[in-house]
Length: 78
Image: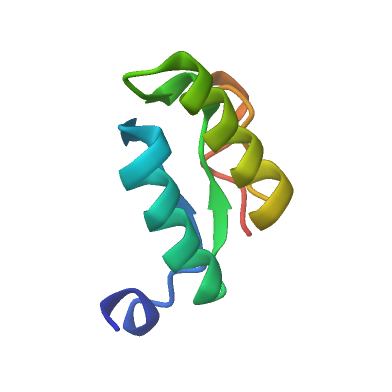
């Protein structure tokens, strides 16, 4: 509700346990219509295979931009 009130449209997701916390947060935000970015080099999981699969799910299922952090232009309007 707060993000809607603040007229937030795009979320930048990073964190640990990418195959759990980041992935589930992304799913929730996607279902609420937010544009998502999740730089792949800013997300990690205990297991590298699970981390790669989580990034694939973000890209394929939710159209999340997982480009490296350095390529994200934070000044860009969404």
